[in-house]
Image (tube, rainbow, N blue to C red; front, side):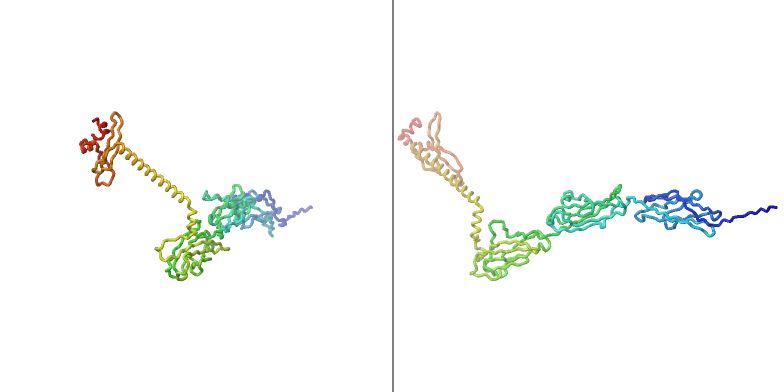
Length: 467
């Protein structure tokens, strides 16, 4: 008799799970939500619970493991990733069976995040203040600006440029330039503090992304003063004209204000602080100059022994390094009182005569015209007198005595009646003028007064009147 037996093999959990990667994407672009990173399958040759598996990943990662069809899983992102926050993730896929003891398999993958140009360059400062001394050499490096970009690759490469100035009259392109690669700024030409003290402009930093992103910063360049201007004297003027002379009474007390030297300096700060000093004087010790205000005063009482004319040389000096100076000459005349007429210095009078020849020519011309006019008047009067005298001698008429007997006018007529008449010129009495009152012929009066005596005695009169 045959005996049959069955042997049942009990499975032992002796096979760990196995992970098979079907698809994997790396790097993945940032700012993209729910991207499929990987697809994998899990298998376990054991049976029963020993062949059942569970899969998981770390809890602190922005990824999610989703089961799909049997034994297949999909790894996706929970939300959009930021490469600037984290550029790489190490993910451990843990697969565990349900056997006893449990066996576990870990599969490591590395997911990189690719960059997207989502960050504009950022300047290290919102504004920059730079300093440059005036009269600088061309192409001088005056400072730099700097900007960084959190992106990567071309998206992080920054180029610099100058923005157009707010004032279109400002020639910014001829004053300053910027290195496009490193942001260094080179004054292109010498700057003048007296002409331009502050230069403001904008700088742009742009990346090389597509599209490019950019940002701006303000740059202020302060021009520092250099002592390049000498003091300029406003009073007394030193322009080559006749010098101004200050009058000082001999009775002036010590400290009497003679004059004041007024000067300015185009620089600023200590470069424009002025001091005054008396360098030379005709009589030392007679006058003094106050160092801070340029006032010229008498230092002592004046006496008759002091010379009348004095010449002072005053120096004006600034406080720069090195100091610059200018000099001015003052002329002082001591007088007994202000009623005494001003006596110009001999050299001043000579300079004035030489400096104004036009006045001399004008005086000569005026004298010539006046002389010529007077000569013509005298000639005219002489001719009139000669004519009157000749007419009187030819006519043989005597002028009757009466009202204004000397004012006679000789009129010669022409035509059919060729006769000579004499008129008495009567002026307006008491008027003081030479206006005519009337013209009265005096020939009839002559006839009536002489009762025909002159007519009988004078044949020329008889012929004239037809007698």
